[in-house]
Image (cartoon, rainbow, N blue to C red; front, side):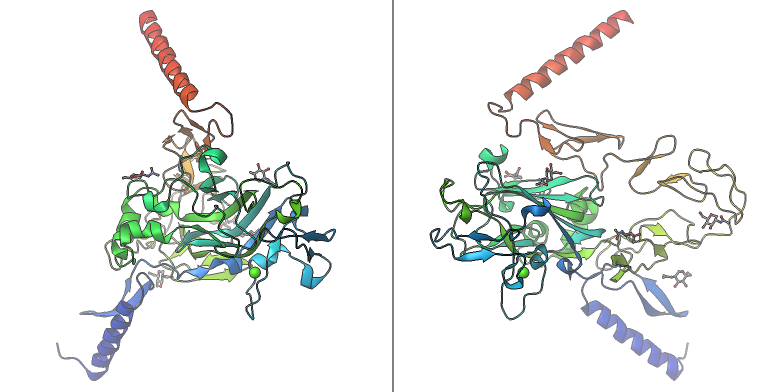
Length: 476
Ligand SMILES: *[C@@H]1O[C@H](CO)[C@@H](O)[C@H](O)[C@H]1NC(C)=O
Ligand SMILES: *[C@@H]1O[C@H](CO)[C@@H](O)[C@H](O)[C@H]1NC(C)=O
Ligand SMILES: *[C@@H]1O[C@H](CO)[C@@H](O)[C@H](O)[C@H]1NC(C)=O
Ligand SMILES: *[C@@H]1O[C@H](CO)[C@@H](O)[C@H](O)[C@H]1NC(C)=O
Ligand SMILES: *[C@@H]1O[C@H](CO)[C@@H](O)[C@H](O)[C@H]1NC(C)=O
Ligand SMILES: [Ca+2]
């Protein structure tokens, strides 16, 4: 077929566009015009927003509220020179105040600004602080979380995460100068993890030992090292990482969160013991919290922007919602699916398809508020229910005579520590863990508790079970 000059130009332009797309990062573009025998048509790809510095968007809450120093004004010392206590924290003077927002400010002119707590004057009562970071948006970590402590890193700390806007929490990583002593856990390093246990929650001693407060200020949650297990040390093989993200249950969700929480449980000591005669040198101070992450848009958006004070995906592929986790009205011919990283390099967009005109309405009685549809012909669904007839459950819900919220699942609410999820309603925990998601060691902090009793108990339970079973059989 002869080409007229204008369509030849168009083809060239399209070719150029294709080249540009190929040189962009992976999954940056949701669609492009391509030339085909039938003329230019849209081609759609799986796409995700670029990583951003999420500290700009985070809400910080510090608890207890009166833990920030300076009200009343207080002097403090440093661990390096505990007898030189000339510094003062005073909330009423801008130069001497250390409010929480100094953990997320942009430090200009090289001046380090930091949030600081009161000193440990109430020793031996523990100095406990929770710092909650929230975004009201599902995010995916793309690089290491880095928390910078001035005046020494905590000797005991827990990083928690929530996947449901703070309704439930799970530990993400434990930090201590002695993991066994603080949490009854063996110390591990991320370098000890392999492809089979990369999502294991570990306790690390790497960031809590005393090395001098100026020498090493950062505490990390290692994302890069975990990615490197699949993508190589220089992250040169991202295709392999993305393939694993798709095939390995729980891997993507391991890096997903809506909230983070730091539980500071014991400050830097500068040595082995707490010196009771100089408690003014013990406190926490954080100058910066870096959270490199991208909006989770289920591979249906290439951009994420701030709207009404909240980050929202700019959904493509006829999807909608804050995370693009539903099909737009009129595009519900098939049920919604997230985009897929596979096949590489462009993935599958899994776009929502236009639905035909809706007719007959025969709303599902368990899923809908009323058996009949409303004036404009739609079934009105109960909470957690979706679909034209309210016959489907939204993500996070399971059908059980209507949709009920999941207690656990394979996506966001993973049972921890080897527990298994039964019908999305209950985690069955291994003997030495408990909690809704098996997130708590059964013997945390208790003396003389070494797992033997838990083992004994589970053997006993097993025996009782066998006994009960045989009795039942006998009576039948
Ligand atoms: C921190 O959060 C934990 C878990 O919700 C809670 O048990 C603890 O009391 C909180 N601590 C402070 C100091 O608010
Ligand atoms: C959180 O985001 C949702 C969805 O954008 C919005 O409706 C809600 O108002 C936000 N909540 C807060 C506290 O900002
Ligand atoms: C993870 O698995 C590797 C071998 O596959 C093992 O050497 C390592 O100890 C495991 N790490 C943890 C934390 O269980
Ligand atoms: C939604 O679908 C319509 C029809 O297929 C298409 O014209 C439109 O570009 C799509 N919208 C998005 C945001 O992809
Ligand atoms: C009917 O239900 C749909 C879907 O819930 C809703 O968007 C629409 O506003 C409702 N119409 C009337 C008249 O209530
Ligand atoms: Ca700062």
